[in-house]
Structures are given as C-alpha cells and as structure tokens.
Length: 323
Ligand code: PMV
Image: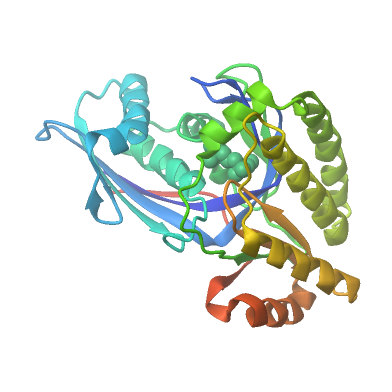
C-alpha cells in the first residue's frame, strides 16, 4: 500500500494535440507551472482478497466505464511489476469541485506514484513521468514542482517531463478565476483531436510552440515575469484559435471568460501588469508579479466575487509514502 500527493499544473506553453493516441505522445513540447493550491492525494492497495479493481474518487465508487483510465494505469503497473492482484484506489481531489478546473494532471500523477510504489516498483522521476503520461498528457508534468518542460520525444521511452526550475526564486503567482459553467464541456481529448484533424492552422501552431518554448525559457532565465506572462497569453490565444478554426468550430470561452479577459486588459492599461491563460474550459488563470496581487484581486472581486478567486504560488513535485 502506498499514498502519493501530486499538485496540478497550468501550461504556459500549451500541449494541444497528440501524435500517438494510444501512447499519448504529443505533437509539440509544452511548459507549465505547478501550483501549490491544487492537488490530489491517492492511496493504492494491491490486495489478494479483491476480485476486481475498486476506484473511489472523493469517496464515490466509480462504475466500470468511469474506472477505465485508472484501470489502464493499474494494468501497466501490474505488467511492469509482475503483481497480479486487483487494487483498491482511493483518491481525493483538493481542487475546487465542479469549477471545471482540470484535476486530471494531479490525479494521474498521484495515481502513477501510488500504484507503482504500492507494487514495489522504484521508478525514477523520469519513468514516473512516462507512466503518468499514459493517463493524461498534462500529468506528465505534475511529477515535478515549479516550472516544468514536457519534451515530446518520439516514442514511449523518449516522451517525458523534466524540471526547468523546481524552486521558483522569483515572485510569479497565478490567480485562478473560477468561471461558472452549466454546459457540458468538450473533453480535451476530443477537442485536441478535432483540432489536429481539421484546423488549417495546425502546422502554424507547431511553429508557434517551437518559438514560444525557446522564448519562454529565456524569459525564465531572466526571471522576467512580464515576458513570461506575455508569451503565455499569446500562446493560449493561439491554442484557442485552433478550436475556433476546427470543423466544426467550437470554443471553451463563455461570456464570463471574455469579461475577465477584458478586466485583465483594463488592469494592464492602467499600469498593473497581469496576463491571462485558459485551458479546456471557461476558467481564466491570471499570471502576475506578487506585488500586484492586491490590486488584481480587488478588481476581479468586484466583477465576479471574492469566493471565486484562488491565489496560488508555485508548488512542489510529487511526494510518495509507502505504508
Ligand atoms: O492532459 P489533458 O489531456 O487534459 O490535456 C491538457 C490540455 C491543456 O490543459 C489545455 C493544455 C496543457 O498543456 O495542459
């Protein structure tokens, strides 16, 4: 039996498209910031008394269909370790529920850590990252803290994350703005798939990412939060242009998303530097220097309410306990 705690991450240069669906090899590199406020804790116990895998998420037992991706990781771990027992998986998300903030990154990183350790495997961080990748692409990066790069690689061996700066020693912060949504969202899996298959801009996106990866690493070296924020904002807009230009076109933005984007632009026009990014949902994440936090929070509280704002600092890498 083992427990792992992994934090979620938000991409500053996005992953949006797979080269290999089965192995989750991406089309491009990507780069993210791990956050300390949002995490998943998962315990895995391989038990010879069990007659099937049992998956609990936030104390709810999942049915067979909903457990599929978790069982996929357990099967990989059984194959690697030679263990043939079924497992009980108990996972708790410390991510605001129903807010549509992605928890798959922290969830599959924690699952990879707990399952491999419970099976007696002593995987390196690199191999843990490769295993997490098989559950969800963004989970590849949640093995490490701070600023993390996922090198696309060409196959299962060569596609893994590596830390760029684990202990972030400059005052970058991220504010999650929890925009409400009632509409069922399009999964990142199908959203990116249709973008790759149908957007006429997909080739340009590959070039954009290559340039942004080089530029953002320079900006990180220079500890230039404004430049990091600017690159992240442009990159997010270009990712979302792939959804608008797919056939059929779609968007993750809603009216509130646009209201928040406008507020960020207003702040900037008034000399308070901050930048936005969005993922496969309507929430906005704002990037800024800690010294601007109060002004940004005050402005956005007036628009959307204080209870829908969560300030986060850079967070740590995965921790695993054997019990
Ligand atoms: O890991 P997935 O399949 O949920 O995809 C994540 C996609 C984005 O969050 C939009 C971008 C990223 O790099 O995390």
